[in-house]
Length: 76
Image 1 (spheres, helix red, strand yellow):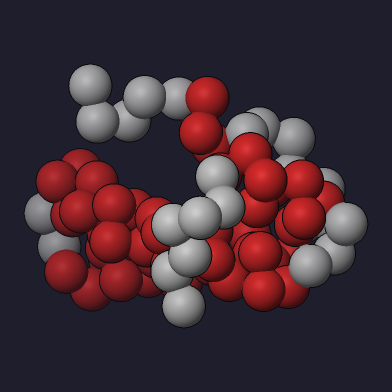
Image 2 (cartoon, rainbow, N blue to C red):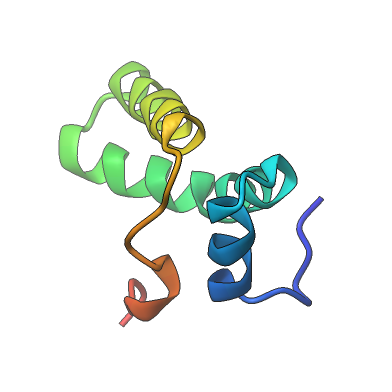
């Protein structure tokens, strides 16, 4: 599942070519972080779960990913 050998930039490049396994990898890497952030913002588990689902749908529906996630330091 989670492949630490590929960087986020590599996964985004693969996802941009339509590689569904790269999109899945990005989702798996960030779903917990998205849930945690969402929960901190809305303080509601059901709404937070909905946000994770929305994140997944947006990730899968995009043909191109223009923002390379790894360029941001989310954990600083």
